[in-house]
Image (cartoon, rainbow, N blue to C red; front, side, top):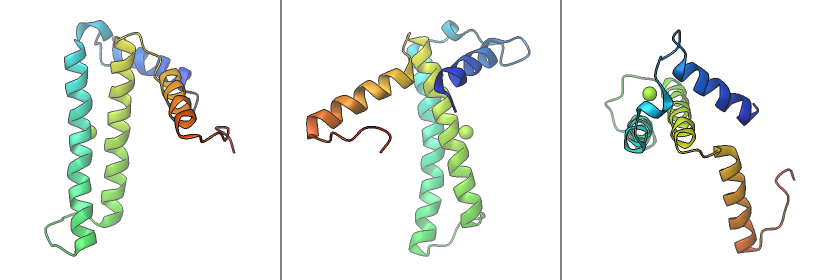
Length: 116
Ligand SMILES: [Mg+2]
C-alpha cells in the first residue's frame, strides 16, 4: 500500500458527498483525537478479551480467531482516523513516521536501512 495514495483516498472518502460527506476541517484537532482514541479504546477492549484467553478466564463470546480479526479491524479504524487527524493538521503521516523513525534509530546507533 502506498501511503500517499491511501491518504488521498481516505480524505476523498471522508469528504465526498457519496462518502462520509464530512469536510476534514469541520472537526477540530480535539474531535479527531477523540475519534482516534475511541478506536484505540475499542482495540483495547479486544486486547482485554485476548488477555482473558491468555489467562483462561471465562467471559468471551468470541473465539480467539474472531478476537484477532476484531483487533485488526479496530487497529485499522484507529489508523484511518489517525491519518485524517494528521491531514487535518497539514501533516503527511508517512513522512512524519519516517523522519521520527530515522531520528530515533540514529539516536540509539541503529544504522541499518529501512529495507534490510
Ligand atoms: Mg471501530
